[in-house]
Image (tube, rainbow, N blue to C red; front, side, top):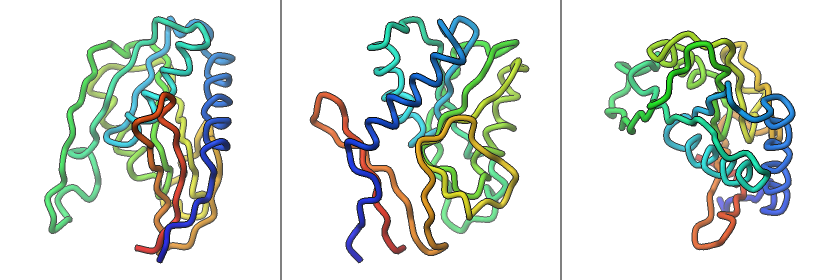
Length: 180
């Protein structure tokens, strides 16, 4: 089946700017905030948000990249070995406001594993969740985003994917829906 564009590049760029404005409203100068992108695709979203935050005058942003592979509840159940990515948490989260960032919220299991993994780096003041796309009818766990780009209704067999364009100044984003 041919992928179907769910959100245009223009729409996604508007959502990214809105998410940045919401972050600035809540976190001000980000002096007590750490943005943490979940490997692998949440890191791509984190990079886009940091570019936009820098354009809006927020320059000193503490950030990290978190891989949750070994904290997943299906880690030892898969026949295919999981491919772990690098974790780069070079900042303390003790007493800080942490914003977990991922591209698509589906079952909630990745976020649950991120909540477990983040404990290894200290006890934050608070943890919030930012996602670009919420597949709201597919949740297995009671996890909801604090910051949301868009909600997409997709059938169980469909795959909602964020595709990051390369070779442009803005690294434009669009979404596809395709059958698995």
